[in-house]
Image (cartoon, rainbow, N blue to C red; front, side):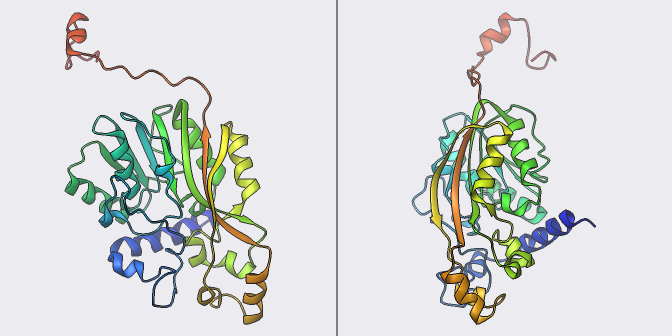
Length: 294
């Protein structure tokens, strides 16, 4: 098994476990919990309270931003969420697209896809669907998506340039993305970077901020900007699992910075006009819905 496959297996196992737990169990690993923060999945999350379309049951507290708040989603858009988890960001996006739009969530953990589909069924959303796949090999046709969103997921994929290339491929000309992710300024200690749990929690998989933005630009995106940036502090009780007391002190006082950023970028070109074809137009063209030409 290759290193890339091993890392994907680690992530899938961790997130399968999370998908099967109650939210209260996941929340106990949050930075603000009264219990020791002995896991790292929740220390970066943003508060969705008051966000239109928010579904508490679908919020597992695994994100590091609120990309849908910055994504400029319009009514009727087709939106793609990479690493859709239990569906929270998809349901927020659906609030913006309305019933006339479409939202597709892609996640490679079967338990997450199952959970998301169950949530969508409860809500009665027939324009939100979830597909199981790797986000570096999207089951989505070229130039069919208006907006791509993702919340703290690219770090979980070893081949990040391939994901960015896939985003470029599926976006329509004039389409755009808004992605929340973790980046670094300075290098993480080896003990943190090499640990599997840190990788599954999006920290060890982080790359340098300049490299991250450069990768997006190199793919061909334009009008790239950081929409939001916030520092992430790893609690000391987590650091103590990996570092000596001396190393913890050095890390806390050092120049290494871990940040959550929300990045925006556009695919150049003019977005095609949305056109609703009336039934009368179909009849005029002598083309019935079941006739094979529509």
